[in-house]
Figure 1: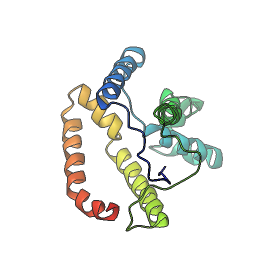
Figure 2: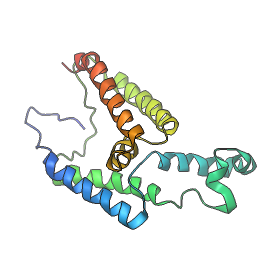
Figure 3: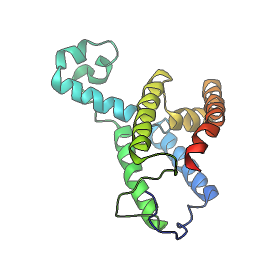
Amino acid sequence: MGSTTNAEPAPYWNPYAAGFALGLVLLATYVLFGWGLGSSSAPTRLAVAAMDVVAPAYTEAHGYWGAYVAGGENPLQDWMVFEVIGVFFGGIVGAYSSGRMQMSPAVDKGPRIGSGTRLTAAFAGGIILGFAARLARGCTSGQALTGGAVLAVGSWAFMLAVFAGAYATAPFIRRLWR
């Protein structure tokens, strides 16, 4: 949400305190559930649940989707679905508690890009990242936080590739924000 006044926005949370808290949450998920954080399985489970309503025989017979509904299991009965719901509400609490919550909708963007283009690019980027997360068998939170915490070589390679890609594309995107 963007600011409609020239006033400085409230500061973000202290990144060290937020990182420490995130580390404690990651540790708690290992202790309580036996694995770490991630978010890409929640949209997958939502898509499978929708497919199971529309075409249950196809979903059950499908090599990939069928594993989510095997034995009559409800694909939405997974703690990661509730984790993503918690992340959504946690974002609201975080924005409110830091004084950055706005009730009027706005689109953060630079002066060289329109709101429609900004939203279209964000939506397209989200679709691409969601697809890539399934190919990589995990999103950035699952790969970087969970895989990185257990020193998985593939997760560290993934993180390096993400940072390299971000640094390579940042100059092009930055032009739209100035």
